[in-house]
Length: 426
Image 1 (tube, helix red, strand yellow):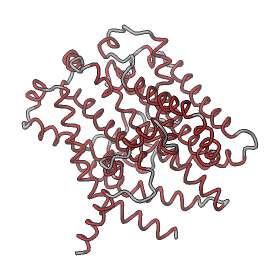
Image 2 (cartoon, one colour; image 1 turned 90 degrees about the horizontal axis):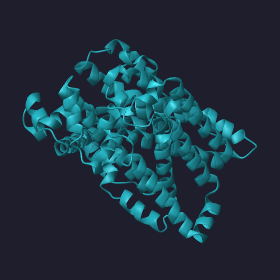
Image 3 (cartoon, one colour; image 1 turned 135 degrees about the vertical axis):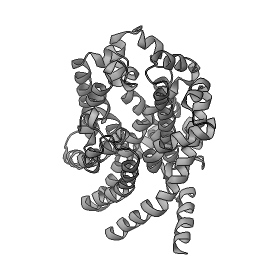
């Protein structure tokens, strides 16, 4: 009986947004996890073609140009990073202004209770299904698996969990430096952002293959460049920290400078509307109007200098667009009101609520989803009939299955541990 009651309560919480929560941020989180799942479904489709690269490119070239965004779906992780930087900083800035002191012990305890239980459960399931590199699972438990060579990493996509945890460890230093800084704190954060971009530039510049070959040539693992690209650029906090810094910057301005910003935007609504339009254009340009035509890249028909700038700055450019939409969430005027209305749809909340579980477990459900959509376990038959519409259907079935499983993990793992953390902190 108690199990049934707990499950019903968990389901209600998954589908009912609490009062006072910023609804539009839930929309961003839901879009982020949807992008990641769609991207992984397209990414994993490469495995169906084996070593037949030409057939894989022929399949990719069947994708309509207006759907080029699916190859940018890994930027969903950057959305998560911006939101993490923003929400962590916003919460602690508020705590600082209210209490003049931060409970760092409680902060880390809550993060561990939030992340570890479901993550350990995910690793246990993975160990039962996949033995390759299982001897290195200790690195996942210590959140340092992204420090290992690519060939030794276990459960590759969990690098993002480690980057998140590493950010939580670094954030107190950033917070204390910011609070003790006697100069312009916005300038300090912009300086950190510039330093992060310069570091990324130096890394890319020092390894010509990172810009002489296409980013998605690396991600697809073609020409043997995938491991080096991953180790040097893709899975490290220091090369992916820009979204976190932008989130912190937004949190700082909206905590300590909101009234003057509100007054200025109210007096200059046309500027604010332009501000939101620029943010939307940045997202559109980053996600679809990119220089990433797969066949052109593979044939080297692209400009290495432009590719260098793209590799260095495209994620920060995209993350800045997300940061602008976060600002719009706090000033619901004009175009921002329409954007917030869309992002606040109730359909987004369940996906946002269990997005962590969906991220951890969705890979397990891609094959079952393919069976549901295709109706056959024969790989050769799937390859012959594969098209982008079928892959999109597989992605949404994967999301549905992952959502159902995520409700179970929330009810019986996440929710009990989160409540335990709240009790111990009170």
